[in-house]
Length: 467
Image 1: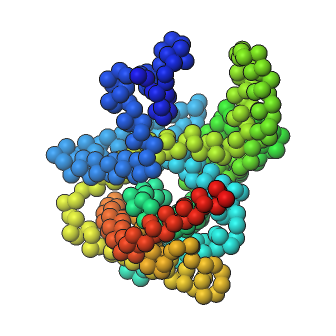
Image 2: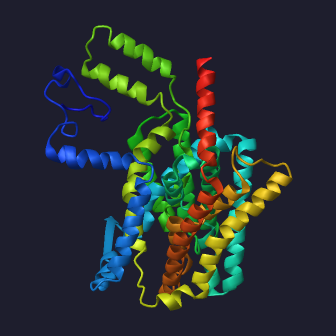
């Protein structure tokens, strides 16, 4: 019997389907054995992390295989686009890093905007502890890195160990299930978002070498045009996409990293619905009164329903799969491939040791120390049912810096491939060690207690709802 498009229940009345169920909902072998399992996998919280890890593993295997030379040859293939007298020619790797990763940074900008307007960053009391913890988790790793490498050429990578990979961190926490209290998950997620804000500031301020002020002025002007259009309640998505593409090009030409265009546009995206949802409900009742929908009614109903949901939430839902399942895996595939022939020498280089020390030791140390100071000063309090041992484990998980760390590594040593390779090896080793240490510490810290506490809390909530 066919299932619903959402896979939730069987459909008893074949008339519902009219001309038959959609391919995905049918009982055809490929739909049943391949398409639906893939769809369910992509709905799992850790799916993006699994694909990211798989892409990184493929890149490493490719770069260390008998056809290793094809890795560099492929990703350094030049590709150009010309617009009359103006054009861009970059390697495939740079197109991934400078263009495709705009999607990732745009989603990050949307997440930050949502958290500032409707999420946990809106409440100073709730946000205080993870904000302070995130600052500590950025400052201490950078200090450890500088202490190991000094201020020479290698010192340019001080921003690498400051980053936290949200996708991997959330994925690892997801594997631990209900052992981790929801308040502790919220602490890590908020910390990671603040960490992203810090990384964006670092990239914009410290990893921009030369500025073309005319192109930068054009980019700022285009951002202003988008803000004015928003104030005028212009709802044409293609108009914003067109301006956004030109804005990206202007930033690219200015010397500021072009991916920051995604962050900027994400931050000005409306976080509140443009229409009251009652308008959509009222129109739906009127349109369905005759039990028939014509194309005009359907189009207007779709518009009213869509605009009853904040644009930030709609874009997050739409673009998250593209970011998690396409942009990030391709980024890992294009950047994680590094030769391991000189692994022993590379992993003991100052750059690699500075990154490992910063992510594995500096992250948890900075987060725990900053959190302790914040609690003692009364700036915040520990999340419910969260111990200091759990904060230490969460701090270790925050040491998974993979994606953003690789991104900053690519900006840190533009003139030295050797230092870049050392940095990549340090990032991979540090992220693996941080994940393992974090999982072990959290398992020891929870030991089933958090799971029982969550179950008790759920039972209490259910009893209150009944009474």
